[in-house]
Length: 241
Image 1 (tube, rainbow, N blue to C red):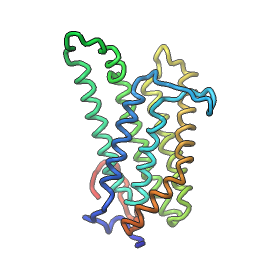
Image 2 (cartoon, rainbow, N blue to C red):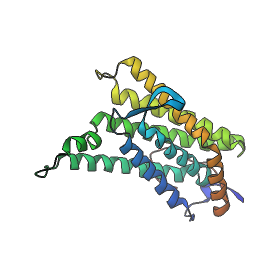
Image 3 (cartoon, rainbow, N blue to C red):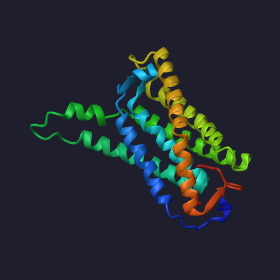
Image 4 (cartoon, rainbow, N blue to C red):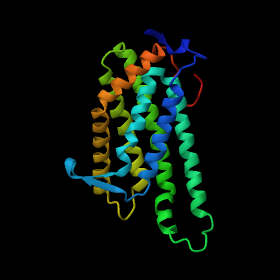
């Protein structure tokens, strides 16, 4: 496997990058649909009484895939995937708003349930997009810089460290923006949910570490490269590679 710097890969073609990017966007969109309704909180006896959003079962996988993209293909290509996910979230929000506000066909009795699932308020939409944008970029940049700092060693440390940063910022942005000040969301409940979401998301990604190792190893073997972001411009405000 060849160790290369990301800045030397301009115009390079990768066999599986597009598939991994699509997987990230699909998981991101579907987990947002699953967890869109603000009352879609569940509990599982196995983890105790903490409530958590249904989307948490899958949303952290999008962050995990972002880590895989950064580790295998470098920050610049992960940045393109993040922008693709952000644009997809914006278009999904537009689609949901459009279909919810279209005239209802005579005899249709499911509009209330339809609006409950797809009619997310502007606060939730803005909070979700802002949290994803900031959290994912910070996670990817942390992952890339830790790889340089560690010389490519201790992959588990890079995954866990970047996850704590990314998921922590995601939770700190999303929940206050989406729910602070609402009558049915007292500050104590907001804090409990925010903390439980963060712990569960990080724990879920830690449990998936063996899977992440396997996926990263397979992709690096197939692509034949090990990319390091030496000299990379870490600004999020470009899609250049």
